[in-house]
Length: 320
Ligand SMILES: NC(=O)c1ccc[n+]([C@@H]2O[C@H](COP(=O)([O-])OP(=O)(O)OC[C@H]3O[C@@H](n4cnc5c(N)ncnc54)[C@H](O)[C@@H]3O)[C@@H](O)[C@H]2O)c1
Image (cartoon, rainbow, N blue to C red; front, side):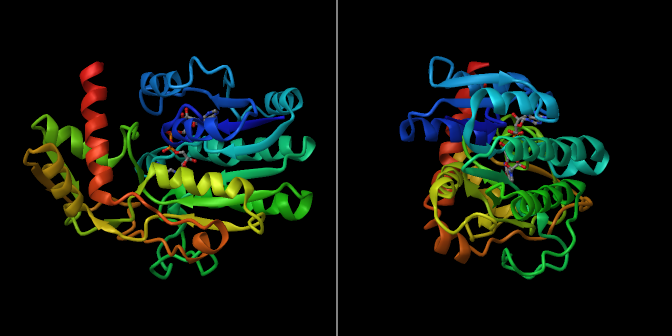
């Protein structure tokens, strides 16, 4: 019996596989199609972290291919599925919604169908804080009205959650939906604001900031997200539930920039731009449910996490 981690070469997926390794002797299948949403070389570097580990098999394939997923599940008899693979950027989904629909909705469906045919003990489905939209009460609570997602990305994540919960009700696929909030840490995706800000400050480039810098994000360290995911693999009473994984301490964009300036020892050259569509003014996780069901408590303090991230950024870019 093995464990399937989709998107295992991505930012969160690669950390998660490394976290899993000392905790299980089960074989782990890392499924990733290494697409070019961002530089696949970074994904190759991420996956190199378990290159020499016999316990991990990297399968380079798309989970949108439903017959291939049926075959993969038949071959490996997965005990658990941790579905982290997705198209995950907010703004690009406004310009190019079709690939989001394909990867995040159709792709999730082909995995759920495979899990229906080849039963698993648990199916973790990574959703996102972007399912909370205009109209959601702050801080965001899982079982309160969510509002309307402000981007096609958020809408596809909500659709994936609903498919997961339907497959639980209808076919008893033991789905748990997790909603991570603005994850950061080493190996951070290059398309995210924190990377763009760091690159601009480090390299003396002009830094475009959209809006007035008061947008707040509930930045959550990837190690805390891995804690929440591993807890959700075994916790009782979580199947059929949807659970926030955040930090519950929203940080203003201008505070993020100040934190990066401090960590890098350099000053930002900011070019203030009008707000862009698709951005929520605040993300803020209510963690009561995560603590109650998973014993989840984020541990990594923001300044400490930022320093660690900046160290990784410098060493990664020095090496390429
Ligand atoms: N990073 C965040 O701040 C954040 C916040 C909320 C939710 N999430 C969710 O967490 C998950 C992981 O996000 P991430 O930041 O690590 O993103 P990522 O882009 O680094 O990782 C996703 C991986 O999925 C792979 N993938 C995409 N489509 C695929 C397909 N059809 N078949 C096989 N592999 C495919 C990509 O190649 C990539 O390696 C996603 O589901 C994302 O929506 C992330």
